[in-house]
Structures are given as structure tokens and as C-alpha cells.
Length: 82
Image (cartoon, rainbow, N blue to C red; front, side, top):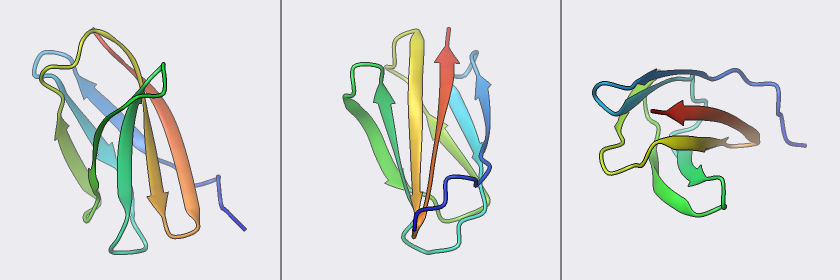
């Protein structure tokens, strides 16, 4: 069964076009995907520590969704640039 109760903390730095993800991964293969609101995958990678900083240069102002997959845990969070 998937666990959707896991908490993720996002901090967006508008000035530097970065997003800080605070999340405690349980597995070494924890991944993230960033989508626009049209469902297009714009960035993906691995989360291997409690704090992960992602550079979002080239992203236009707007809303995005980060999806984190950690074993049987799934979490999504919306954030705003600009």
C-alpha cells in the first residue's frame, strides 16, 4: 500500500531560481520529478540526503509540481516561481 502522508518541506528562492527540498528518504533510490501544470516532466533526479537544492534556471514564472517517490511512499507538492 502506498503512503501519501509523508511530509515534504519546500522553500523557493525566487531571486536565485532554486527550490530547497527537505525530505527524509528511506531508500537510496528516492527520485523526484518536476512537472508543469500541463503534465510535462521538466526535471528529474535522485534525492539522497535530507536537504536537496535544485537549480531551476530556465524555468518560466508559474506553478509547478514536485513528485517524490521513495519506496512505497509518494508525495506531491505544488510551488510557485515568480
